[in-house]
Amino acid sequence: MKNLKTIFVTVTTLLLLNSNSFAQKGQSSSGNCVEKGTILIDGFYGFPYFNGTLLKAAYRDSLGNNNQVRNLNHFGGKAEIMLTDKMGVGIEGTWASATVRYMGKYNQIYTAGVDKLRILAKMNFHFATSESVDPYLTWGIGYKNTKIYTNEPNEVNDIDITLVPIAFRVGIGMRYFFTDIIGINAEVGLGGPLMQGGLSLKF
View 1 (spheres, rainbow, N blue to C red):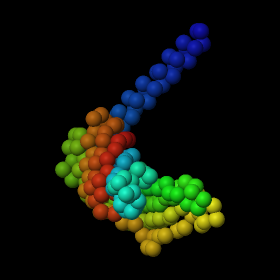
View 2 (view 1 turned 120 degrees about the horizontal axis):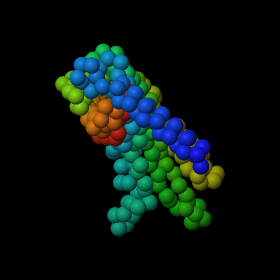
View 3 (view 1 turned 30 degrees about the horizontal axis):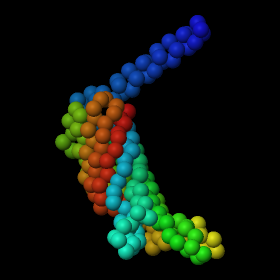
View 4 (view 1 turned 60 degrees about the vertical axis):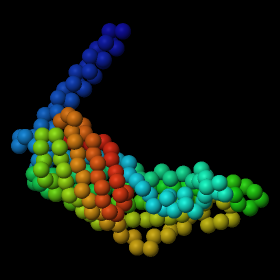
């Protein structure tokens, strides 16, 4: 029991020391929430996924229902490092998926879907930054791949339908930090999800 108490106290002390260290790193000498050297990590959910929207429109039944279609929209993450107090560079990745259940041969139910993967190099211009608010303009270019698939036997299970494997993104976004480390983010733009939002971390 004494060993367990010792381990608990030691782990708790280390966690507190680390949290204080991260908080100090999150504090900006300029008074703004981001500055040169700041590292930003975002996770987000975005919508719509237009391929999923098309699937829903195509697979309506006679009553107008499309319950057999599941559109997950976009899941993504991005990381950025500030090169100056205004300019940052980073990377962004998004994955989108939509599936449909359908009746194939011999009245069997199968699943088909369409997935899209995007990886981009990004550059952001931060403006009107304050102690807790971080607005920015963003643009980027990179790679994308779209494929369709099915689990129906005797069919081609995976087909690449990417016409042009180039992805782009232009948009405007904002982060709001509740603490020196944790915040939320929102962004609208062209290329990828029209709207996205999620959680942010700052170091």
